[in-house]
Length: 219
Ligand code: 5RP
Image: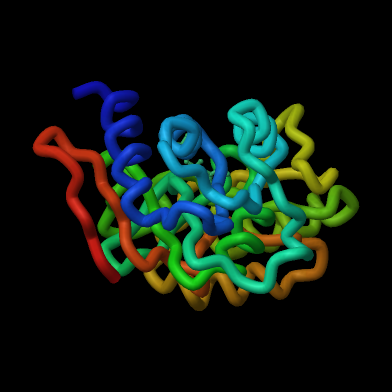
């Protein structure tokens, strides 16, 4: 199976976690696009979605799915999103699509985070994928120096402005052996909007697309 077929497989499988008529959280990315397409095929529709990006909002609206402001929602039963990397404890690196801050907000509203990913995303230690950090533009150089002091090689993602009007620094060369500690550390630096380590908001389960079908990892 191709990577796109694996994404379609897990996008469809995630429908099993969606209660018709409820409001759900929806992430961002090519795997989530497959999930949104599957939502469009549900015979009984969902009540609406809280979306993590303008990109997903446009796709949801095009299918006639209502998109609610996060401020109108107290909690969500489930949040479905992809990942750039996921480890065997459910911690993730996210933000390849520059939507990490809104993804973290919607994940925080949800009781369960169901990660959907093809098997190439499963890793032993996070950090092979460059770690995205969303920053306030005036702090970009300061934060890049701090990231270098942590042992990483930071690079500003050129030409990218996030949905929040901020910039992304991608950090290569980090071995994230303690995701929760590194998330806490980087998050507290002035000028950091959020770091793409999802340890506090880790996955409850991962639907992993493999050549043998969907493998469910529970954390
Ligand atoms: C966007 C994300 C995505 O979930 C992540 O980049 C995975 O994307 P894809 O499903 O296209 O591989 O974090 O900010």
